[in-house]
Image 1 (cartoon, helix red, strand yellow):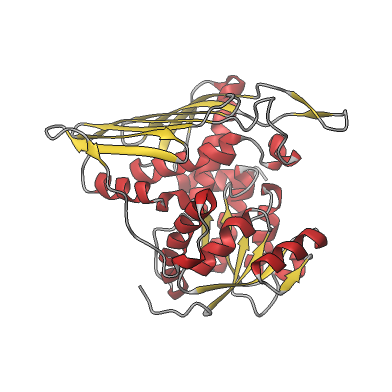
Image 2 (cartoon, rainbow, N blue to C red; image 1 turned 180 degrees about the vertical axis):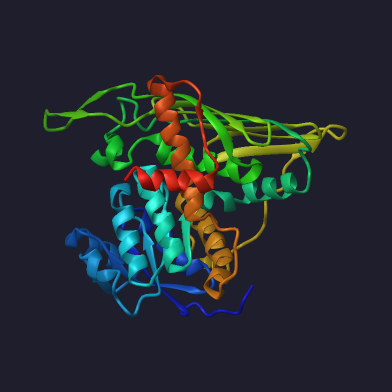
Length: 377
């Protein structure tokens, strides 16, 4: 890794929800970055978060914020509906951009972001930081070393209680599909990205995507119309010949579970357990399964990481950021690209079309698909 001091790349973070909880600690934990400014639209909340984080430089106007000459990187952690506008403006201003997933609300918006990134040549990345979790790093190493042999089946199942009627409501935008809400784009997208990174892209998609409770009662007596999904089942025919089966539901009372299965001619990987405590096993055909040893890699400054789930996410993001550093010298990196963000949204778009009656939806190769998506805008 290059010997880059923490102050070399000055980061402005837009959004102080996930941005404050995960992104700022991640930038502080990673070598080569320093989060120096925050931007959010609500002054009172911004002030409280900035004081807690010890960041004095704040703004409530993202349009002027991304234009600043004293910022090298714009990190976009707003609600999804703002991702495209902020990213495009930042790229036009000559900034490197790291954008949270999902990259945009639609595949066509994401295609425009891909085109802008290519045109400006600025370093860009999409925050699929789960690839850098200790267990997934270890799985990636084993699979790329040939553990599976010929891949046959990949299967992922996630469950949670976030939208069960007994739970308090989340932010209103999360229930609106047009604003990028729902758990297919909000959570299962990490698994879509990981399987594509590990095994290659799909050539066809079939799915059922649904909202179990189309109307939710608001505390003031009003009603919230739900257009985003809480439950999805997705089938992928992968270009490598394997099949991937992914499902998620967030309407199970007391539900908290994750399972990953990878089957191949030469070996197997299985992870099973609670969302925050999944136990993994892996092994070849002859030797049987044994506990998977997670990666022990740590970022340069782990003292900035909080305990618990937020710290776990920040650690993964910090490792991703350190792997992003060579991009600032013009080198390729393993960090998820805007093209990866576009692919995940193309899969989600196909899943919705399949669920609405299209059956199996074919996916064109990435190069022609990006052009097609741009033409639909």
